[in-house]
Amino acid sequence: MEYEIVNACIVTQDRLIPNGSIVVKNGIIHSLNPGGPPAGKRVRLNLNGLYVYPGLINSHDHLLSSYLPRVAPSKPYLNWLPWDNDLKSSIVFSERQQLEPEQLYLLGSFKNLISGVTAVQDHIPHFVQDPFVNSMPVRILNRYSLSHSICSYSLNWGDGPKEEYAKALKDDLPYITRIAEGFDSESRDSLKTLDKLGCLGEHTVLVHGVVLSESDIVLIAKKKANLVWCPEANLFLYERTTDIRDLIKHRINVCLGTDSSLCGSLNLLEEIRSARKFYQNEYGEDLSPKTLFEMVTTNPAKAFRIEKELGNIETGKKADLVIMTRNSEDPYVNLCESDLNSIRLVLRDGAPVYGDLSLESFFEESGAMVEKIRIGEADKYMIGSPGNLLESLGISLGYKKDLAFFPAQKEFDNFE
Ligand SMILES: [Zn+2]
Image 1 (cartoon, rainbow, N blue to C red):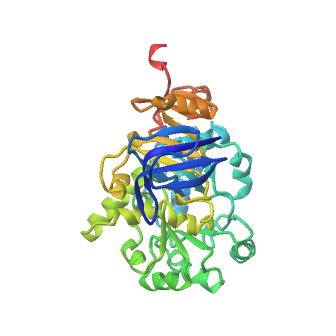
Image 2 (cartoon, protein in one colour; image 1 turned 90 degrees about the vertical axis):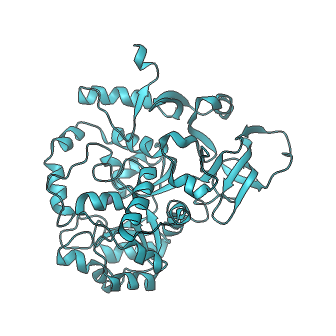
């Protein structure tokens, strides 16, 4: 399909195009124009000045854990292990176990899509996510090597740090691991342990870093490793998070992630707001909205080594885009103040996957297999079969479960 988005306020990493147009051809951004009369005969989508952002990237999630409510009966935790034990012995966990992995992956996908996230890093061994990668509505970033964490009680994911890091170098993948996530000595030493193993470099993506020391941060900067920050989950489980100001000061490539809904935020937009609030409370100053924008677009594209394809609006990149309501003249402030109601349209590979009913003709012309669903107070089109999912959840659980990260109702439910 070929079409042109016109009258758009296009937000890219290095410039703002206030009255621009984007030609999308075969799922790719074919051209980016500053304005003027549109050329050629194409389907046109007139945005009347709405913002177009690159599709957001959620840098840390566990789609299999897309469930609620959050569990942490004995927080703050020493490290992830006692929390994991609490979780696995909780009623919430046994209820979640009644669902099929596919249902949970769909919930996680919809959770991300409705918040403008088009790509997600699902931290889990490949064999768990592989069956779902090609069928999920959201893009699962599946090129990576990994460890669970760097400690003697780490889960046995991957082939071990050295082997996984070697794979990353060989195939130009990110090597992803949790780090410094706890107050025990192994967690505190984990960054230096990783470095001693020779696994700290540009391919390394560190997640959390709750207890990173000043010298750890200097070392991460020196080795040009990347860090994923999940403030909401860190504060929930440990009542503290990393020294983000120091990380930014050292120009470390920082990305933002929600973590799983069983300990983190409801969605990436909420995570952005939490991050901003935390920074203001902790340091008494503002975390720049532009920096936050980069943490969910260009920075993860760099960390996950997908810069050529995703993370910015540029000719030749995949047309993963999100169109949002315009409430502020500053596009970065606008993003930081957005919520689920701000999302008007989400495009993945140029195809509409979620959006307003007012875009009916565009959805029709695209041929996308969407259905109508109510999200919060608004009726929307959504790819896949969210209605079937809701129905199947009711059957599996035996009651109508409310999941705040996916506030969906089958259309006309009210009238049945
Ligand atoms: Zn996690």
